Image (cartoon, rainbow, N blue to C red; front, side):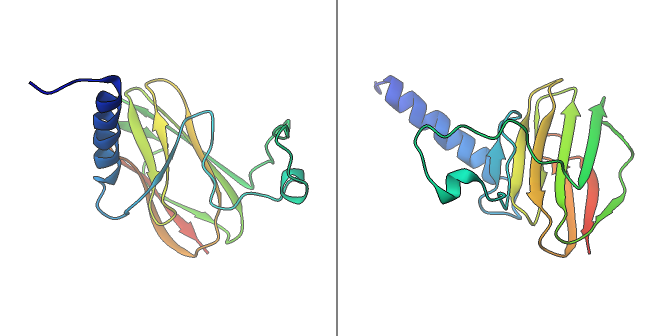
Length: 151
């Protein structure tokens, strides 16, 4: 009979979570952030980078995004409807999604993601530093929310 210690249960849960995140197929290691901690591909410089301090606190407010994209999912319907959204290269982009079911947001090409607890907004924030066409989707419900065009 196998032993079920807290450590072995935690290891099993971690392995399952890793397999679920890797299930997308197009990206090997997407970053997943909790809704309260947006993922970023390029963090803006801060005082902490010039003078590291173990007691440094985060800035009181996040910088305003150049482009805010807000999507709502209810009963598998996407609002605004799926389409293409164009942003300029170098813009700071924030994508916020609220879903009526638990899911995971994923931005292909940038390897960013966020957990989407049912009814709670989840966000990713990043600098659009790579030109191209990128799908923004949910993993569990496999909905394409929109295609992001970076020019």
